[in-house]
Structure formats: C-alpha cells, structure tokens
Image (cartoon, one colour):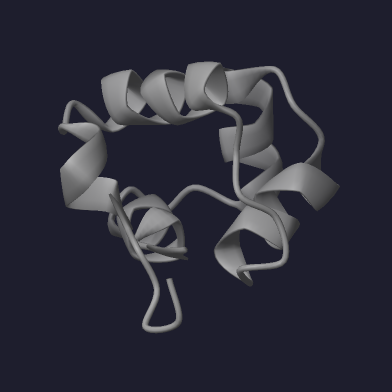
Length: 66
C-alpha cells in the first residue's frame, strides 16, 4: 500500500518520534509505515487520518501490485 505519511509529517516539521508519540506507537512503526514495510491496522489508519484531518483515502492508496 502506498501512503503519504512521510509527506504529511514533513509538512508539519514533525520527526518520526513526534508522530509516533502523537499516535502512541513506536518510531520504528512510523518508519515501517513510511517505507511501505508495514500496513497499519484499520484502527491505526483511522487514528492517522484523524490526526492529519484527512480521509483515509487521501493518505493510503492501494499499490500497483494490489
């Protein structure tokens, strides 16, 4: 799954640790989501969308192979 988490985090000048703290996850989880190594659970995806005040579809998109 492709996502805009890194881009949205950068627009706010947040570090991965800053975002992780806001979402109550580890920095490693944020890194894995941003690099496409981990797709967040649905509850976490909703939490990310609420934090960035965007619909889930504006942040996460199916990848080319899906």
